[in-house]
Image 1: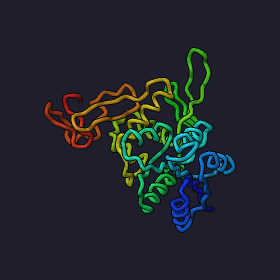
Image 2 (image 1 turned 90 degrees about the vertical axis):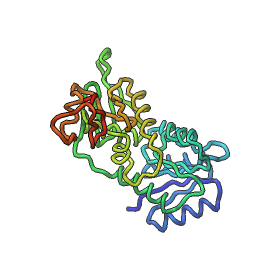
Image 3 (image 1 turned 30 degrees about the vertical axis):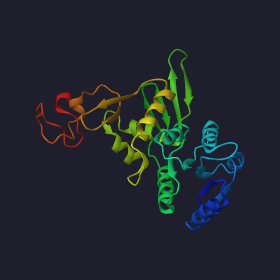
Image 4 (image 1 turned 135 degrees about the vertical axis):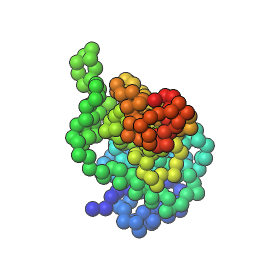
Length: 265
């Protein structure tokens, strides 16, 4: 069965160009020229796999459409089309729930690769049904996340975007293991991701805020920037047992794999 792609673009020439190339690539395409029509189409076709949304639109813009989709619980991947090149504009899209972005003028091959990368991630079959960690419970198959509130003794569902869910899942199955920003990019966005590395920081911040509890710790190395792991009682030295090349750690030695200064081990 063909995967459905929603294309929201108010300029007819660009929209027709996108639709033509997506259909040639084997996708079923649903078109919309306004944000209002896009939301209506999505409501009618909730099996849409990826939404390609133009940012600059009359009426409801692409950011608002993306935010409305996420607010309604829609789990499709979202790629923003933007003529804006400032990092702040890109972060705005990510903060509203987008998974990726393409800057105009864009390359069709790059857009197709980004769509394919999102589809690969969403099609992955997870072996575990439910993962539990402290007050956190994740239904992998159903894509549901719950936090247990001790004072009330009840589970409260936490709504995450598709990419936030995938990142939380990766952190959970690697709890206690240091994951660099680049490692998270490769595991969640794929090795063919060409965007900003700071997308990791944005999603981690959103996950922490939505969970309401800090289960993710940040470790800063000399030249690595952000390093993430799910908190547990392991020491730094234990974390590096498998990756350090020697059994003895010298004060001035930097692990060749994880790149953490040895004086932190």
